[in-house]
Amino acid sequence: MSVLAIHAGTIGVTALVVTENGQMESKGYEEFTQHFPQPGWVEHNPEDIWQATLSACATALSGASASPSCIGITNQRETAVLWDRRTLAAPRRAMVWQDRRTSTICTRLREAELDPRVSELTGLRLDPYFTATKLTWLAENDPGLWEGVESGNVALGTVDSYLIARMTSGARHVTDASNASRTLLYGLESGAWEPELCELFGVPESALPEIMPSFGPVGQTDPGAFLGLDLPISGMGGDQQVALFGQTCFDVGDVKCTYGTGSFVLTNTGHEAVRSRSGLLTTVAWQTPSGERTFALEGSIFVTGAAVQWLRDGLGVLGSAAESEALARTVPDSGGLVFVPALTGLGAPHWEPGARGMIAGITRDTTRAHLVRATLEAITYEVRDVVESMGAGHAQVLKADGGASTNDLLMQMQADQLGSPVERPAIQETPALGAAFLAGLGSGMWGSMGELRDTWHLDRRFEPGERDDAGYERWRAAIVLTMAAARHF
Image (cartoon, rainbow, N blue to C red; front, side, top):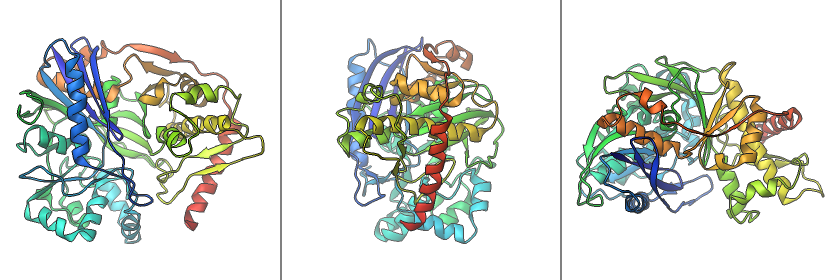
């Protein structure tokens, strides 16, 4: 038996076929186009995501020894997608989680002193990162489209909801509790869409998907719509919570960091929705079919791997992201250079949507190798900021995954900065692996989380060495300057 696991990420779609012993049998991957129509705006064409999903899944299935028995889905979170309920066509591009155009809406709501109430209900904060303010922006700026939402002709959802609608030919309009908890419309206490929040953001509850458990029966694919497959969808969740699950972080205090477009540090807090006073978010990690929820504290860092991508595509400093490690190793340190990669604002624990990127400490001796090294250092400093905000005892071991976790220099520098070991699993596609685990639990392929724990295998453990606290202090000073500069841009 096997599972087809789909990870619809921010820059592409990964599909894995995972066997019942937790091994990756085959893989497919397809990127899709990123759209930046104005500074601070980030958009995806939903049809591009769907076509990338079809392509990645077809590739993965072609390398599998047998047809899978079920499907699991995980996705980039917070991205707002709209589609016609009848035709399933998207009337406009999706507004991506990185999109910052709703900063003024957030400011307006904060000035009305609504942030404490929103935080109390959701465990989140008023920031453009989350879905609800994107929907408010659409209602205010595209009234013709919003008429379709209010009439019931246009559905609202996140990427998981959209993909399941496409896979089931519109039969299912659903999401799970982990994705719902990232919208600013879900109540942590109620475990449901909050009428108070829907009214505040002007979102009709009738347009939102049904909230489901993270594993168990979700829907059945339509063979005519999805590669001829007639399979149950039995697992779903937001990619960062699902990565926590894929890393088998099932115990309170377990911590993982996914190094992708951004970096996302989550720690399992068990069945208690712990509130942070240090700029972290409270989120649903997963929900069982019985309704029991596991929660997490999360530090969301918006730009890490995307900074390396910017060095490659924006500046031409790198020919490929993979070159970053070798080039950074040609210098012993960053030469005093500090890079704050606030290319789409600052996330946790600072939360400054108006922040811009900053490079400080440039001299005549600065080379592109120093810039690349400073970029890797920045990633480790950002993660250290978040882990330290979680408090003592939250980083006995950090489990790392995501594309940038293959960079051995980065992982060693991270262990040094945290002063604790970093463990990298044999399968670094842990969001997709976690989706497979959820689907396999939901379909009965695995009987318990204990069975899943036995399938996790270590690739490499990085032990901490000497820590560059002077570099970190320069970073902290640069953050202060970045935050101050945000008031003038």
